[in-house]
Image 1: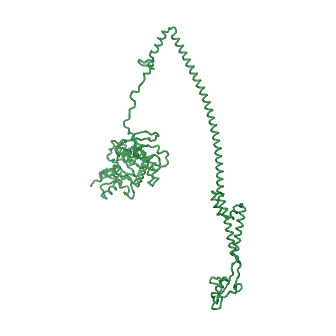
Image 2 (image 1 turned 180 degrees about the vertical axis):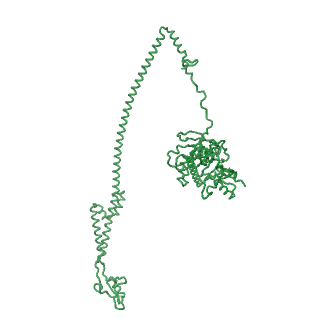
Image 3 (image 1 turned 120 degrees about the vertical axis):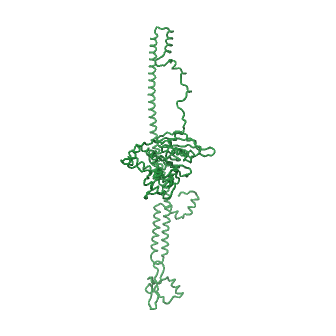
Length: 599
């Protein structure tokens, strides 16, 4: 055994007997023989101790009044005791009814058949204990040996792995050296060829120039043959000042090469500076967009500015904000509890799927369909504030995933764009959606840039942002709209001066009605009478009058309005409210709120 210190060795040897010390020095085969002998002694001694009796017994009987002998108890066990207890009982006054059993032994006395039974039992215990002790000693040594064997095996495996890696690295090194040598040879050959080609080109160009000079000299000599030196000088001056067919007006060859005849940098630039530096925000009105950035970058302020533009454009705006209340969003529909937010997301998905199904089954073009949505007041925009936390608090993960995929891919053409405000631009932050590779990276994004104040260490907006347009990979630097205060009241947003989509003419409306609702019949055959409501709108109106309601908010009927046991969405109920207002039975007093006229 390997000892840690001398003290460890001293303590271990003091706790070990001389027998076990001698036993530990034996080889394995002799240890096995010693253990076998000890087990044999133990088994033999136990067998000898098991049989026979270790003491004498006196069997006796009791005389009954009928002069009969009773020699056993109710369980059939004979009455007996040792001679010691028999003599002691006799000295203490044994009853005369007790007599020895003449049927057993000599006058009831039966001699012991195994008087050394205790010694045999002790021998059995000693044999088994010694064998167990030796086995425990062998087990302890085997456990220590197994540890060393395991370490040795791991050492050998590590050496083999290191040798294999070394051999592999040597192979890689040889291959890399060969590649470098080959590439150097190729580069050298290519360089030599390039030098040769360059020399040839220089020689050829020189030859051409020399030949041209010689030809020019020959032509000039031929043209000036017979002229004196003064006449040659006047001829050369005349050539320099002579006009050519390729020059205009008073231009000469000398004038075209004058270095002073250049455009100076004092002229005004051709591109005028851009005055409106926040016009890019209009891209966020009709498209699904992501506004993200660090805290204090201005995400929420920009979102509120966009909501104001959306209301001016004619959208019905719904805000989902779990971190505020309705006082922060006056003038627009807003929902703040997680149950309401989840229900609005569910309604949005159902409405979007319904529009897609209706459009796919219709014969309208995309432009006509979108005009129809605007004409019927169904342009809807959803604002998802703090979207990073939706996946943590909304239990229906499948609904969130479906909402994210539909909203980011199918919402724009159905006039249902959403604006998402989050802390990052990953798909995990956007409702935890999966699949649709690079879905977020392809959408319209705005990153609001923040900076940390060096004194207060608080983040604040820089007034700058980066914009990545839809299906583009380029980020453009832009300025955020300047606002002196956060927008909380949207009720004073000016309505759109004109519909963002051109109005539908009467013929187109009739055609849409024929294709979608009248199913081929004439439009005039199914026109409603004035002030006549649809069955559902009539039931809603009767419900309001029956309950003596004066004002009705569309959000109040989301969970409790039924017709024949069927629940209806907020959008359907709001459509019936439009019918009631159109019939002159009520007036709009706020977004989604009507006031019934007194009858």
